[in-house]
Image (cartoon, rainbow, N blue to C red; front, side):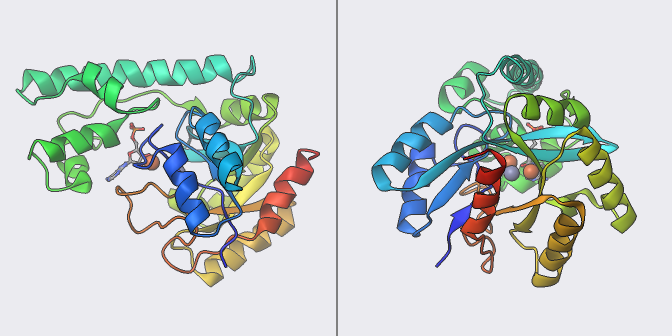
Length: 279
Ligand code: AMP
Ligand code: FE
Ligand code: FE
Ligand code: ZN
């Protein structure tokens, strides 16, 4: 029986199940606990927690923040307090920055006759709107076959409607997560195309900023990759975590709780986080 899943997106960012629907699915799958880790927002937590109370699923508050360190690096934060004076204004800034970038993208699409209405997108989508949502609209109006095709031809860096946004530095991200009571964890370590020395440099640098954990179990990571990451966690004294990066329809290969099929995240990983929090 699968136990937990600590990396999940909902409709508050680019997932397609609402927080409550996600908890319901977790309950049907027999999961004991999940963490909601939307991009740049923790707005899904209250409704997920309420559904978790009803169904007996433990719900952990979380977030996933995109940072830069030579290239993009994603940091998960667990048990954050999104209202804290350290985190709240920074999340506001990230969402405002997204909003400005999104308006530029929408204007340029509208100027080309694409029926995109940003006010409507704000009503329809959650707190952290981004390129995945524009990609969905491009699919819906028949300009792309699927979201990937929409990225490749319209919104990927270098394509016609790409507009940049700003990112927190790795250092600032980790330090504000810590300041808000959160536990910062390096997400999907093999996503950054680093060789072993590069990954160690990233880990050591991030630990200098306050990193406390590393995602060792992840959709598509095989047994030897997981064993390697667990050995790094042990060597550096980092807490191991794991999750599917479930998004619903946009990433159907990442299934809740089981990832691409063989993902299994033990409850002991969550106990490690709770112990660190003094819970
Ligand atoms: P944004 O933060 O709004 O610029 O959008 C970035 C998000 O788009 C990432 O978190 C990915 O989930 C998604 N994404 C990036 N590139 C692709 C791609 N080629 N195909 C599908 N999704 C993508
Ligand atoms: Fe995403
Ligand atoms: Fe990520
Ligand atoms: Zn994610």
